[in-house]
Length: 397
Image (cartoon, rainbow, N blue to C red; front, side, top):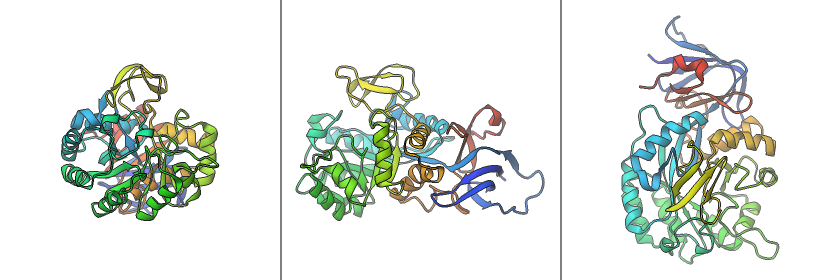
C-alpha cells in the first residue's frame, strides 16, 4: 500500500482554499484527506516533514514544444519521454505537446505518432496535443513556415482530429477568415478547444469568435494584432471582453515585467494561464538547436533565431513563471495556483481529476520553497523528483 503524510506545509488547494501548516494524506494514487487522520497503523505510511514549504497542485503547461534537444514536431515518443521527465524538476505534473505548422501530410503523420504516444513510467502526464496552426495569418506567422499557412479547411481539420485519435486537445487559429467559425464548431464537436493566435483579426472578428465558442488566446500579445487606439485588434478584444483564457509567457522576454503586472490587474488570475512556450533548448547548455525548421540559438535565459535574432520560444520552466508573476504582478500563492493549475485543467476539461488538491482527486503534487524552487514533485501518488533531502523517498519504477 502506497501511503504518504505530507506534514506541516502551507497547502494551497485552489484559488480559494488554503490550509496553513496542514497535513495532507495520500493513499495509492489519490488524495485521501486534509487535516483528518485516517485509521492507518503505525509504520504503514511514510511521513514527510515539510514545515516552511508550500504545497501546490502539480502545474500544467499547455504550451511547450520540447526540451533536452527534443521537439514534438520531429521526435514523437522520444520527445514525450524527454519532456515528461524534464518538467518534473519544475513542479509540472502534466502538459500538452505543441506543434508548429507543417504540410498537411506531415502534420497528419506527426499527429498519428503523438496520438499513439504514452506517458513514460516515472514522468509527468502527457495530456494531449496542441496544434499551433495551420489556419493562421501570414502577417503574424512569427517562426511558422509560411509555405504551410492556409485558409481554414474543415476537411483537413477533420482529418487532423481523426489522425490524432482523440489526443488533439487544443488548436491555435485565426478568426480573420470568413469561414473560421466552422473550425470552432468542429472543435466543439470533437472536444478540441480553439485558441485565437498568430492572427491579424480585428477586435470585432475576435469578439465574434468568442461568441462562436473560441476558448481564449495563444501566448497573449505575441503574434497577434495589437491594441491600438484607432485600430482595434485581437489584443483589444482580450483586454476589453471578459471571456476567454489568455496564455502568458511570463519570462520577461516575450512580455516585459511592467506589462505582465498591468495584464494581471486587467485580466486577473481568473483568466490567465501561465505557459512556457519552451523549445528544444530548454534544460540544455547554451548553443545551437533546430526549432520549427529554423536554426536557433540558446543563450542564457533566451532563445533566438540565428539568422534574424527573432525570439524563438522560451527556455524557462513553469517555476520561473511563478517566480516572475509573483514578483512583477503581486499575485499571491492562491492566484498563482489558479493561473498554473486550476485554469489549464479547466480549459482541458480535466478539472474533475487534476488541477487542484481535494479528496478523491489524483495525487499530483508540487512542493516549493519560498522562492518557488521545487523541492518535490509527485504524480499519481508517487514521488518522481526531489531535491537531495528527500531522495530516499523517490519511487521511480
